[in-house]
Structure formats: C-alpha cells, structure tokens
Image (cartoon, rainbow, N blue to C red; front, side):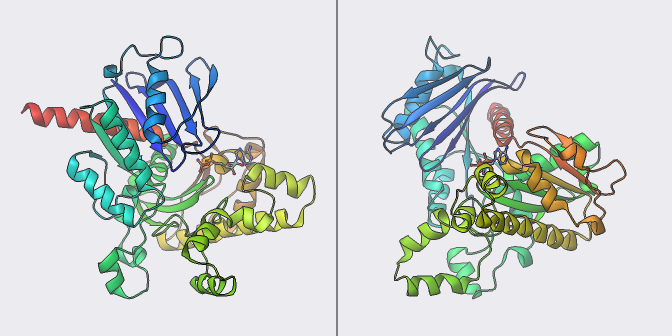
Length: 407
Ligand code: ADP
C-alpha cells in the first residue's frame, strides 16, 4: 500500500510518500514560498539524491499538482501513475472537540474542519486547500485527516478550561486544545517501546522543541495537560511566539503603540519569542552561536529564558502527575541541541534525574537515553515522526473502511 502524507502550511507543502510494506519513503520533499515570490520544490529520494525545482507556485493547488507531477515523472519520480497511490493522509491542525482520533474525510468531516477555521484561522484553511486540491487532482482517492489536537482530547475540564466567562466557552469554544498531538503521541509511545515498559503505567513528560514548541504530561498513555492552548501561542517560548504572557500586555501594547488586531497578531505570531528577545534570529543554532561565539548578551538572556520556561513546566507536570518516570526530548532543538537539554535538566536531581553529560554531548537526531543507568527518571531523545503516524492511521482507516463496506 502506498500512502501520500501531506502537511500543508500557509506558505509551504511538506510531503512524504510511504511504501507501507516496509515503511520506506521512496520520495519526500517540500514546496516552499507557496503564493510568494521565489517559490520552489525540494525533493529527496530514497538514495539520498536531492533536487531543487524552481517554479511559480501561485497556490496550494498548483503546488500539489507540481508535487504529483514530480512523483510520477519518468526522470525523478517513483510511480508510473497517480492511481498507484492508495490514499492521502493530511495533517489537520485543529479538530476542535469533535475529533479525538483520525477520520476518513467525507463531505461532513470537511465542513466540520471548515467550521474550525474560525478558531484556527492561521492553520485549518491551508489544510483544507490541500484536501480540496487532492479532490480535484486525484478524484475518488480516499483521504484521511489526522488532527494535531486529537491526542489532547483526554485533558480533564479543569485543565482545558480558561477562567474567563463560561458563556464564551459555550459560544465560541474558547478552551485549551493543545497542538503537536501526533508528535507527543509518537514520542511517548516510542520511548516506552525503547525502554520496554508499559505506557499504561508511566508518567511521561514530552518536550517537543521546534520552531513551535510544546510539552505534554502523558499519564498512563493519555495526555492530561499540554502547554499550547486555544492557539499555538501559549506555553513555551518559541522561535517567534512568546508563549505564556500576561493578557494585560496585549491591550497595553495596542493602546500605547496604536496598533490594531492584525498588527498585534503579527507581533505575537511572528516578531516575538526568541527573535523578539534576542534580535538575532528565531533559529536556535544562530542564537547559540551569537551567545557563545559573539558573547551577545541578549542571545544569552534569550537562552536563559527559553530553558527556564521548559524547566518550570517540567516541575508543573511532575507535580500534576505525582512524579515523573520519563522525560522525552524531540523537535529540531530537542533532538539536536545538547546545550538546551543539559541546561533544562540541570538542577532537577531532586526529581530523581541523573543526567549523563557524556551521552548527551554531541548527540544529534538519534534515539538515546541520556540519563545514567542509575537515574530513577529516564531522560531520552526520540526523533519525532509525525508523518509515520499519519501514514499508519491512514492505512488503518482505509482498511477498516474497506472491511465495513464489504460486510
Ligand atoms: P518546525 O517546528 O518548523 O518543524 P524544527 O522541528 O525543524 O521546526 O526545529 C527547528 C529548530 O531546530 C530551529 O530553531 C533550529 O535552529 C533548531 N536546530 C536544528 N538543528 C540544531 C542544532 N544542531 N543545534 C541547535 N538547534 C538546532
């Protein structure tokens, strides 16, 4: 079975084609700057060959048509025709309170996802564009939606409610949804597989640190709290988002700077976080370099704030779970920055963490335990694989659908 996984962002389309027989990926890539000047598609084949195609990609439909063209091209592709693809799995950012697991996309599902554009205006519209593009380009192919919010649907009400008038929750669905669910699910499950322990008896703190960053408290296999909220702005400090912020700051800035809603939204989504604090970059590599090679004070301050916020959440999550057994790092920073992992775990010996500096040093993008063998709490690095979860869910749902329709 061949499954195409699509992750459509506002100006990018990531794709991976899975051969489910052996979970291999004959081709993957990304279309970038969709709808902007200088758009291009980068692909990587299973043999490691990388190719870049320049082209005008005016929208998601054109981008996906371009990608499908590459996949089926004689020169660079791996399929002779599109009908060899059995199904398409989409990452969909917000499934609201309706979807606590992945689903086959029907007209009803699509209109529900459309309804959630209201609460996820920066994300769901792009996901829908991807779904519609596939409908047009490969009519009749089954499509599955895998929601970023689904894994966090097990949060109890006292964790997901905000202390604002209850009527606003009823009227608009304002509550914590949490995101990166597919990643938190995958890394918590994979960590337990590696440790050979039963996930149903573990208190796990998952730490996904990428451009966007979030944490989750996973108790007995269920997410019971997570740091992102109604939108992906809450929680940890991120590349360009502030994370937790006194709500009073927003109206204060709007008043003093005389800016409207749209400028305020840009400020908190694109100009804050590590970029805003350091003035250097949103990219952790550049910030670490600025701090250590150039002794840039603001870069240093940014790093201190970043690590401190994660550490604070570890304390909070250990507290709500009555302790912690496993801490798992993932995401571009969690997987590749030994400095961040060390700074975050330092001083946490009281929780039962014995950090192994030797194992952590230089460790990049590899599954590993980075606590000592005696450490009561296991600290781990597990490279995330959201695409694999999407491909597996898609395959499962397609098979289930075939079974029920043949009954
Ligand atoms: P996204 O959320 O967009 O998927 P990623 O998970 O790819 O992002 O994470 C991107 C972040 O990972 C960037 O801040 C980047 O600097 C950081 N990163 C990647 N490699 C390293 C490294 N070797 N050291 C420190 N940070 C790294």
